[in-house]
Image (cartoon, rainbow, N blue to C red):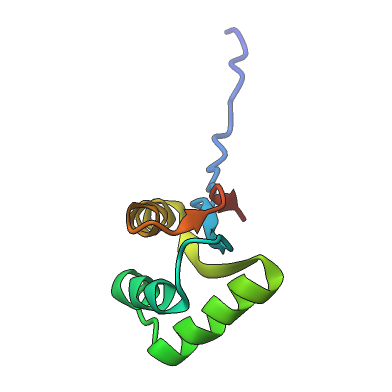
Length: 93
């Protein structure tokens, strides 16, 4: 009787990719507009946190405004871009 090779199946669990949503500084969006857009589209974003991020964007040139599952990051990136914010490409993390 021929020997049969038994192949063990390995269950590979790949983590769902995450991404960072980063807003860049520009010369055409006001602080107020950035704050309103962040509060409108980023879940759980408070006006106080949005003002902090707007100041970071202005002072440091960019700020991460959200990170999490890639699919949601793509949605938020698209929404913020559609509102006129200047966006960095999504960064996988």
